[in-house]
Length: 48
Image 1 (cartoon, rainbow, N blue to C red):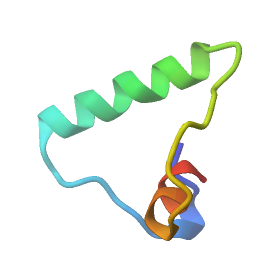
Image 2 (image 1 turned 90 degrees about the vertical axis):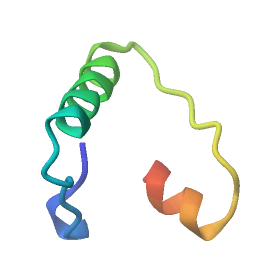
Image 3 (image 1 turned 120 degrees about the vertical axis):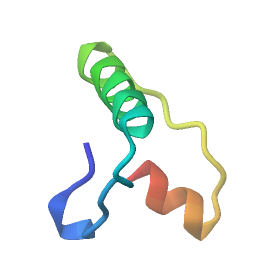
Image 4 (image 1 turned 180 degrees about the vertical axis):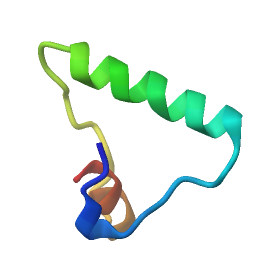
């Protein structure tokens, strides 16, 4: 879900890893994903 070129890694925490896998599964299984984030720089990075 996070492109490798971003260089972002999850914090080594089983709860965070489970939450990330759940979100990843929802996105993978969805027919459409709607971007409803703010138009600021931080939100744009998260949404991309």
